Image (spheres, helix red, strand yellow):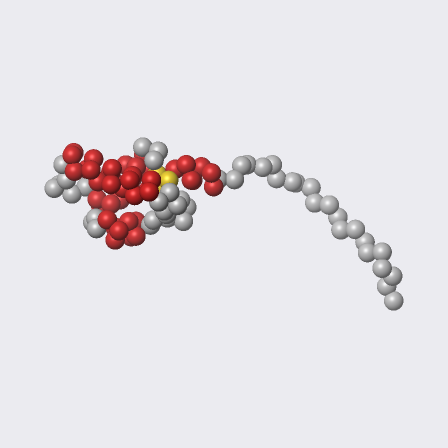
Length: 97
């Protein structure tokens, strides 16, 4: 993060980001979108978002979006056993002319 940030200002920025995600639970932002929304430089924005991921508040999706962690958990499909046997096709009962 930038050298100008103090512990207090980092806390305020974290609270600001958390507040925005809580106000708009469906929000899914890329790093570039988050930078534009909050006016942060890239390193500061990435560090703040990573802090929230590390804290379990946000999740980073495979598509490159930061979303609420509880939304990410709800979107992960349960694991299922794969079928290994393939059934042969049944012959058609229609007569061939």
